[in-house]
Image 1 (cartoon, one colour):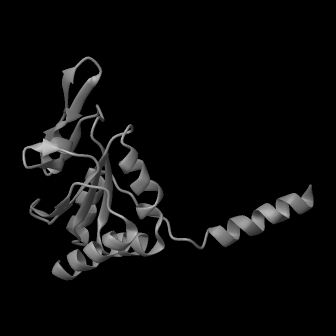
Image 2 (image 1 turned 120 degrees about the vertical axis):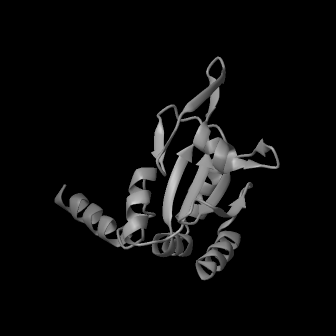
Image 3 (image 1 turned 90 degrees about the horizontal axis):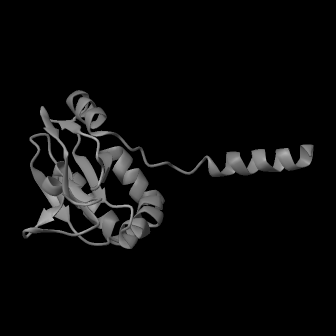
Length: 156
């Protein structure tokens, strides 16, 4: 039994060297942004979107993507169907029902609408004035994400 615990401890220590993506709420990102200005990266997704899950399990697990996001952005994950009100930039955003058990959060609608429609996944990078610097509404693989994050970090 002690050997199994020792092996588990060694494995835990070995894997703890991998960077974890720091995720913030909107209010946390807003407060941190005031102290240390960085763009806010918002990942808009749903629980049923297979491409969202693919990004969560590949793109956002890539060590270089994690490093770039942690160093240069405040990462916020937004479930577009979340029913909880969100206060951001002195404005309260709420869930808007569209039918029985369906609807969209106003903030998701504001950040994920492209050409009059919403596609999941979408990510938006916001500057300190709440202006969308970059908005992509499709699955983004790690290699492409790295390129986009480097470009956005240089632009900021």
